[in-house]
Length: 227
Image 1: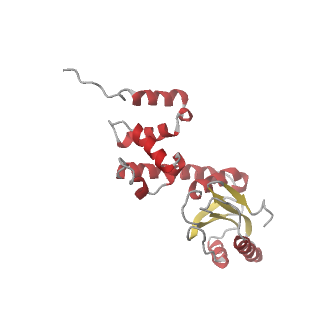
Image 2: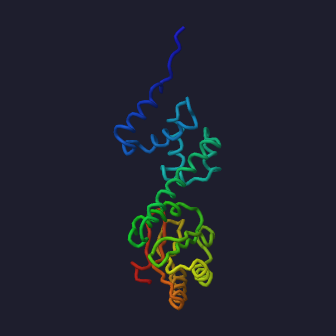
């Protein structure tokens, strides 16, 4: 008796061929997920799960931003799939960071903003990040100094400067995210930034900028005239 082949027979090979011939940009968002899930589901049809993930979280970016526990709430997502989906943004983070390490940060500003967007834009709580630079404005350290709540992160200017001195940094860039989606600085943000700049100036450390990152955009204190 002849066994009937599943409806998705040959689909993986066709998708792989399209990737090689037309590039990944030819894929719809669900097809990107579908392809990635091949690795954790060697024989089954991964399209329904890929579409369900997009439907549940709203976009490909939000799927990658979801926590493992949130991902596993979707039927069909186990530890293997959740682990894979959390590895993708980490790979993107490392690729982008490598790119900004290749030259002075201020000469690759767009890449720096892209990097900060990848690592911070979809965080569900505020975090305060410090990028420390050497005399040639090359990145020597990238550190999260504080994590806060959904709309506040405590920042201590003297601790910021103390860490810069420990690393012998000549300059720094402050970055924090706004989970609300609005990248506009608050009056508290502006006051804290001015205090850091004042302390840094007395010690010969330059504060290049303070960036606010959100999933709807970003803002630069220097461009806004606050530095």
